[in-house]
Image (cartoon, rainbow, N blue to C red; front, side, top):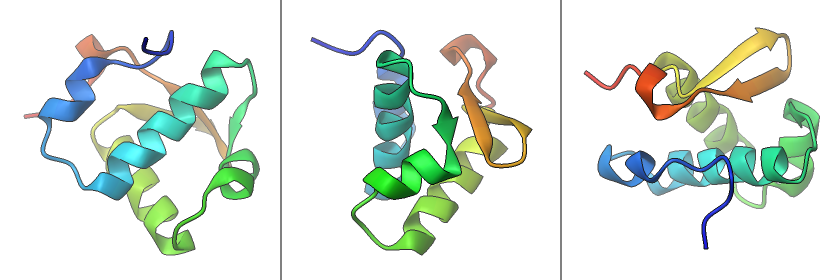
Length: 84
């Protein structure tokens, strides 16, 4: 079973394991109605801190996540992703 917010398309984009992991963590937070904040992500992230930030930057660049306010993120639906 997949989460409510996870889009299967993420697995077809040839992203790094770390970037996909950041996406899945964002989805997991959204699924349990926890705000996706840098603080919440850091509390749960168990790899290198730079990998978290690089993953977020990649996801933002592709409009997979958006940052409407400093340190806060939200997920876009796959139709809004910039994958070209």
